[in-house]
Length: 326
Image 1 (tube, rainbow, N blue to C red):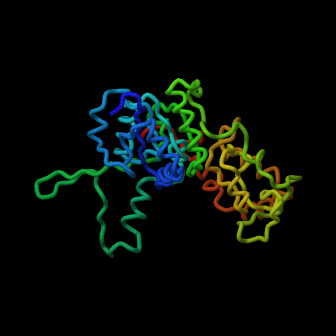
Image 2: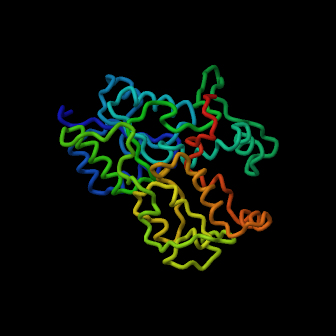
Image 3: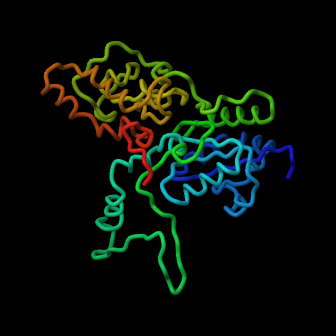
């Protein structure tokens, strides 16, 4: 192993795997990464073992990129292990940064999830009441699986995080920019970003980069994108299509609104926004074209499930989310 090469680990927690694919989507750039770094752990692409990481000296890894939230005891153990073994720990992607789509599970109790998945699911054999246990005995042996926690945690609720790379998943250009910034800092070619920085994205809201025309927003009802023939040049929110762009950090290239799809909020809160959902509540309240309570209720009734849209990626990060460990 060449001493001059950086030591890198990439890991996948509670997530869909799209963040790993986003790194692969940098195409030939991954070969440039290989020139300057040894990938010591990357379950999707390399046959590293947990024991290999456990045997490393503390701080032996220069950078660990972890995507995915913490939903079970295995996620937590590896999250803490990689933090211990790495100089720089990066929350990569929306799930690591804010809790992401898995974090929507925090809207319901763990018992309700188990009930739905294993007891009332129509695909389950009638009468079968078997649920997974963290530990059980079979033929004299003790079998263990990860413990399923009562809630989902974003990474910095478990360990200290140095940098954040947002996106579901991060766009390949953004992934390249973040990796290059870290390589430049670790090799002395540039100063490192300030601790806690959001890397590879912009210090402005998505609306600031959206080319759609904006005027006064006053609407009587909301639509899903497929329910209306939209004007391709007009602000989606002004057409009644609920868009999170005003509360969301830019950096994705405005890909969703440019394709006629409203921003979903995956790049996290825009600078100065404490909670995306609260910001969007304020936005909705200001654009409904009615002062009559019945008219307001009628407009609100056309919204999709508000919490799962306004805080789609950020339930564990919301100040309204319970913060105690369970």
